[in-house]
Image (cartoon, rainbow, N blue to C red; front, side):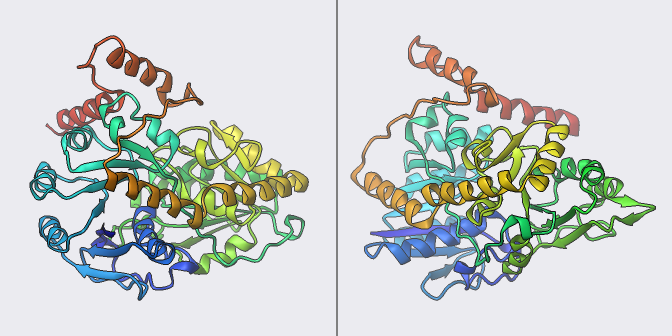
Length: 427
């Protein structure tokens, strides 16, 4: 079987992915996961040949067959020419011409959806007969589209995570350090932690905050503020919370975007923090990365984080700023709870997110697609009050049991309203 995977990463600059098993060299999750999938398919599936079609020349592990084609449509022509059995792509902002070309060339495809998609993409994925499966990255992500017709060809497969080579240190011996990993952009929620930091210091005066990431995580050419931390307006907001007399607090260290060198910081981390607002999180790689090396995580109680963090078992899930502060303080002070959650996190990781587990799911999916098997709908069974899930279930029943076929999905409606509000504001 021949599998083709499309990778676009011009905005990343010259990043070296050759030492993939050592960890993420400092790029966004989607880009890293595409390369990771290629690598581990080759490593574990001897009967699968993988070709990676990249928009620009990048440094990859030697075992990955790379074909450089800048243009999307030209890529599809090459995929057809190469007799690829299954082609994997990330929808992002694909235009209608892309999907028409997929159908015209009859390319058997899988759309790997990493983020929440807008109503145009929902419509195009639904109508494109060559898209045989839509893969969401978690159960909550899948449930968000339960009342849309794309669910008829959708599945979910968790992202795989490979932990760095980090030495396990007893939490009693660690400094009282909190580490945030993620982009420094509003949707990743660091400002919520920054706002609470001075209050955390009042309860734990010797606490340290390490910030791994920057406003350039997704775009190496983004314009930064004077401190080179984040976009100017967002940076100003962060510095208001984390400075005294216009100087950065001694307890705070902005480490910037880091690759495998971040392991030295992670090693001494006592509490990990992942997007405390939950906005945009369909999975949250950084949460699982902390768990994989025995570090309890604090994050938002909702969206994809409900899949990747087990509340009061591998970490603490919160809603408010006050709850965020209390959770961090608890895990800094209570070594017994910290150790227990850390050990649980490693077990949780080993049971759900290792490459060995995830690659089997992909291999199974490939065989189903090749055989032309129909897709079984999985009914939601938990977290009914999160993200209006109960309403999505009601809408699904109205459409499928009572004949209200033309009712749009909640995801479609929300995206449609947002896009039109933006249009009005631009006038």
